[in-house]
Image 1 (cartoon, rainbow, N blue to C red):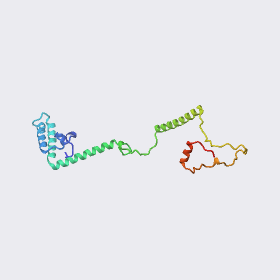
Image 2 (cartoon, rainbow, N blue to C red):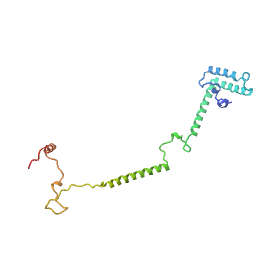
Image 3 (cartoon, rainbow, N blue to C red):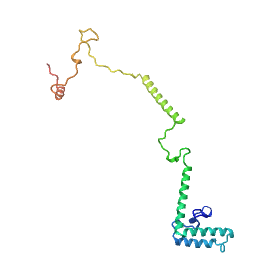
Image 4 (cartoon, helix red, strand yellow):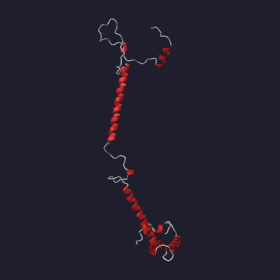
Length: 197
């Protein structure tokens, strides 16, 4: 049996000896002595063939873990097996065809809209059109003018002028000019009565 194999039907050497991976040499020796009494063919109640097989597995585990160099190599192989299992598990849970795990898919991937998304967009558009029609219909029913043209300020033509649209430019059509007296004079004039000229 190779040092990287899991003896005992999938158990590691540490599991077979009932130890943690950080066990000391003394803990290793004590665990081997305790378990060897349990599995030794002369002292066990197990059938002879099974007891011999379990004892050989126990000896292999103890031999591998008691030598510091072989223990270090065995630990490296265990870590490599754990990494391979993790990679296989991650590959098995990845999204099919994308090569990216389901939880790590890019959010900016361009794709066609689904039927449900198209349906939602059509419903949004229909709701917008219906709300506009309803609003305009209610305004028309209440008699609100939908379009109000701006009214320009026009002065009545002089009584002697019957020319209609054509009228001479008057002083009221001229743009307003600021007062020479300044803004304070306007406020003072507004508070007092107009003076005759």
